[in-house]
Each structure stands twice: as C-alpha cells, then as structure tokens.
Image (cartoon, rainbow, N blue to C red; front, side, top):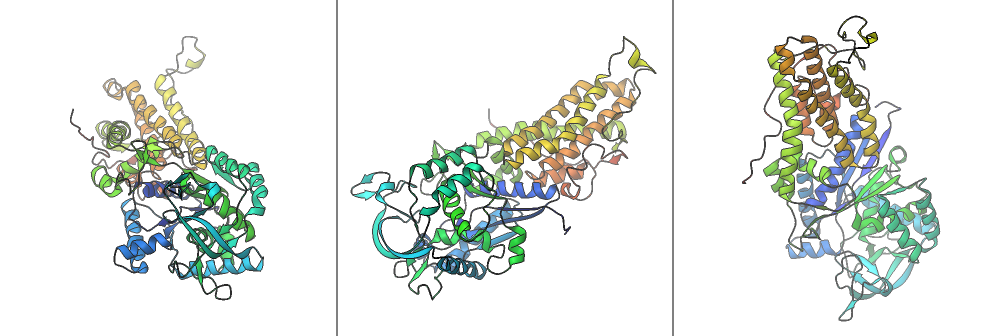
Length: 547
C-alpha cells in the first residue's frame, strides 16, 4: 500500500438476525458497496465493514421458537446475510458478528473505561420496555396508551411495564455539547438535512435521559457479560453492544495502530429508524471514550408498498433473491439507487423496475454500445481508429484559413465531438461531488446525460451518410468519440453495475476490469493509439411485457 494513499472507512449497521434479510437490508448494503467501489475506483484505500447483530431478547425468543440454541440460530441467519451479499455482488472487506471474541473484548474494554471515568452507575429502572425494538422509555415518551399499556414511540406496539436493577450510562450532561457539535458540522455531518433537523429538534425539545445499558441475566441470558468485577449478574444491552462494532472491528482495545489508521469512520450508512441511536447514543459514547466522532451519519429512507414500510410482520416484503433471478443483479442494483433519491422513501414495484430496465438500460446504454460497436465492425472491420490528442481536436477544417473566411461555418460533427470530450473530462468531478453527499440518483443522472448525448451524436452525425459520402476523417472521429464515451461510461457505472460494466469493458476489447484503470486521471484520450473491439451479446435484452 502506498503510504500517502487516502483512507476511506465506511460501515453499514449490523443487521439484526431475528429473521432472514429483505429488500431494506439489500438497499443499505448495495449503497455501501457502490460507495466502497467508487472510492476504490479513484485509488483510495477502502475499508468496508458490515456484519450482524446477534444478541438480545428477540434473538433468544426466535431461537427458542425455532427449536435451536441462540448460537445455532445466529450462525444460520448470519450466513443467510452473507449468502445474499454474494448474490448481490457485494465486496465488503470485513464482516463482524457481535458473538465474535474480538467484539466481546472491545465491549468489556468499553465497560472498564466508562467505570474508570465514573460515567456508569447502578440504578433501578422502573418504566416501559418494548421487546421488538429492545427499547426502554418512560411514560413521557409513550405514543399514547391502549388498555393501560404504553405504546412504543418507535414501532407503535404495546410495551410491557418492568422494574429491575440495571446499570446506566450518563448521557444527560452532554446534550448542549452534542447540539453544538451537530450545528457546527465541523466534526460530524448528519444527512440528509431533514434527519439533522429531526435530531436537533429532539435534543432541543427533550431532556436527555441516562441510558440503561445492561439487562439482568435472570431475564435475559443471551448477551455479552459485564466484566466480572463490575457485575456477575448482568449482560450488556444489545444496542450498546452493537454500536461498539464500529471500533471493535478496527482494533479498539487490541490494535492501536489499526484504530489510528481507520478511525474515525468516514460515513455510517443507516436506516432512518435507527438514527437516534447513532446520532445521540453513539456520539456521546465516543466522546466518553475520547475518540473522534464519525465524519458523517447518513440515514436513508424506507422502501414502501401501499404507503407502508415493508416488514415481515406486514407480509409485504420483497425478496431480493427472487427479483435478481428474474431481472438480474445489476438491474436490481441500478433500480434501487436510480428510482428514488437516497434519503427519501421509495415505492417498489416490478412495473417501475421493468420500465427502468427497458428505457435506461436496454434503450439507452445497451443500445449505445450495440450501435457503436456494430458501426465499428462495419466501417473499420472492428478496429477502433486512432484518436485525436488528449482534450483537443486537430482535424483540418474545410480548407486552409477557413476560420478567417466570413462564410466559414464550424463543422457540427467536430463541435459535438469536442462537447462530448468536454463532458467526459468533467464527468469525474461532477460524479465525485454527488457521491460525496451520497446523492446516487444525481450521479446516475449525470452519467446518463453522457449516455443520452452520445446517442444523440449518432443521430446528428449520421455515420451511415458519412460512410456513403466517403468522409472518412469525420467518420473516424465519430467512432473514436463513441468508444471514448463508452470507456468512461464503463468506469462510471462500474460501482453501480459491476458485472455489466465489466462486460462493456470487455466488448471494447480492453483487458482486466474498469477498476484497473485510474478513473479520475485517464478520461478522454484512452484510444489515442486505437484498439480492437470484441463485440458480444447485448448487455440488456429488452423485457417483453404483455400489452
């Protein structure tokens, strides 16, 4: 590794293994994979962390219902997540499970540090507890009452009243500090802006309560035990345990050099339903541990059907494996990140996916490749002509000194080729800015502007007429311009659709993969010495639907 290589550390939440993965999990994971691939494409040293959250009462109950031990149950479901990531072509660097020894040791270290700083104290909890969300709350936070039971403000289900001795982490004193940190944006950004406003609204309108971070073993045995010198009768609260994964995976308490290299995280990608845990509990815990805050927390929206969030309990979950079997993995990845701005809620339907497939993928990108390579075969026997110099055109005009002639009209083919060249050379900066904000839809829109401009160039330049009129120099320019655009498009779409981008790359006759060539440093001018295409099957055969 080059010493000066910029690092990029990104994480997904740990997925809770009480049931098999669904579209919501795949959405988060695909977005993280796109982000990781993009940063690898531009030459950065990337650590992409994902994993599974495996403790808590829900796991204990689900395992019992399945006739398994909690460890057997979590082994099975955790594997289901990894199997799905293979199907979706997810290239993570580390997969952490909260049942691993490295994580348990880090959690124990956190307990000891907080006790040493006198930030933990024993106290009797008397209030409401929501098992589905593993969430404690007082009556003041209840979303009303039904038949004497408080309604959980998170999931809107009835909670149970409990009274028990636990350990609490001091949060209340850090409210003003956190408000100032979020407002300044100097050390942490919460995106999209609506989520930041949501967090600030909560902090400014509510007193922070200290967080209950343990459970009695006699009520819940399936958790990470507290260090024996603190308590032999408690395990760690599942949410407190899970958040620590972001530092346990990079060496907290075990490998200071690794921790120093990777922390702070550049971005935590999460769903909007767990924003408070990350923006409040996690940030205050990091402060207590004298660690920097994550640079960004991005809380994306949900996929909904009929106006409701997809969930197993509602019976409206889309199975990613079935969608991929029907439409292909890259079409699924593209649809999720193109259809709805990342951060907003999206409505999933197969009709919308098919429309995107047939228009954006088949008609636009697939057709551009097929037409360009067909013309390359027809007019140049599959040879890509040698291109003009990088960033400029030196083709002769109509005649010597034509520019000074008042009757001179610029050659529209030259002008449009120069325009596409300019677009190619600016594409990285535009995409980079969008992706820095996780604005995947915007990035794809910019990429498709180049796709559409290239398709229009075929129509406006009419290569078939140029060939008939033997205007070989202009014909050469058209084919080179299209191949240059396709080369850049292969790289630009590779984070989103790696398999199809690699197929496009191969059809251009290029060796290796799009990620093997530095994206930001090698835009126009790739075919200055020509090339040889290897035209293959259409990238995206149209999906025929019943009229």
